[in-house]
View 1 (cartoon, rainbow, N blue to C red):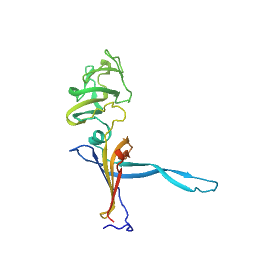
View 2 (tube, one colour):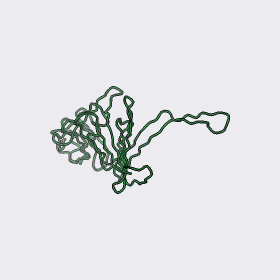
View 3 (cartoon, rainbow, N blue to C red):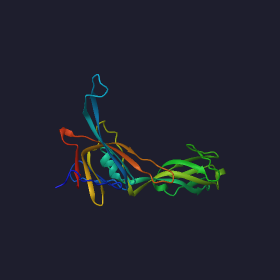
View 4 (cartoon, rainbow, N blue to C red):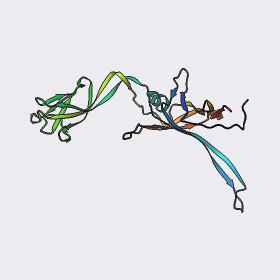
Length: 247
């Protein structure tokens, strides 16, 4: 039997695992977890009379929220925890950035022309000056493109060019098209948070949660740390939180 007066400390980021609602669903672990903040807050009201201090304080509405920061992000975080109705499909669209080719006979063909999707800019290697896209018959400093074949003015022959464009890969990655769902439609999931030291600690189970915010940053010379904000609720008046302790 556990005691009510034992103490223990918590060290490290702990563990955080989410489980989407439904049957036979894949749990989602938050990889390389940096930190989690679980906050239980309530609104209070004070009964005051003529004296300086309140005669009575009562707590009314309460909220349970969590903020998780993690280093790895995966498809199930988007599809199972954040966007409702977003189903991944096989294959992805990749970005070729500053792929270098030289203009010959007024044209250049990019490496992934067979699966080319869209142009995202052409730049002279020597000067860094961007060329201007046109529909056809480019002048010097202009270009046109069709299916990954770029056409230039013959006066640009011999110029080294940086090409940036997107292209598809059928056997790599996945594609998630985010639907424009009705407001109030979002995935519901439970999460369990464990914090401990030397195998002794506590676990917090939030039975029903939604994700209200997902931040996807980048940073110079640093790993990007994503962040998700969660809100817990209790449908039908049930318990929103269970706390399990080892002492």
